[in-house]
Length: 126
Image (cartoon, rainbow, N blue to C red; front, side):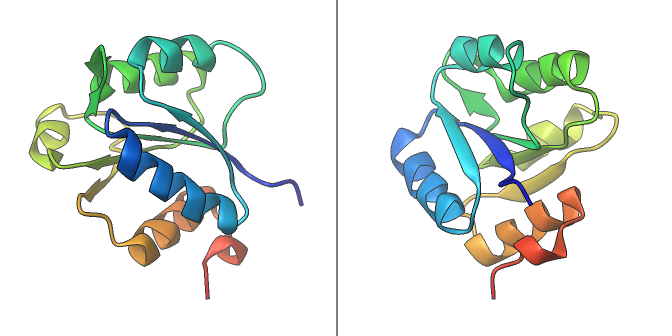
């Protein structure tokens, strides 16, 4: 089975790198973006992602803007928000509602949610 591809967009480069390292150790191919415009531009180019993980705050734009672009370009790709501002995501009334995980992230819970949105129980770390 091919390794799943994940876009990670977050203004907090330090914690995002830490999260990306853990994901890569669990078999993910991770592309990390701390700049919203670069993340938006990347969405338009192949290869596509299996899942997009975004903070509410991404340098230069809102994670909601990135979500809207993802819905236009890749409507079947699940979006997961990892953020200190879950209430902002809830107020946006997104359809379909994304998975929202509040920071600080419990990696085990995060990994289970990723596996669930992809329907891949084999991705759940032991």
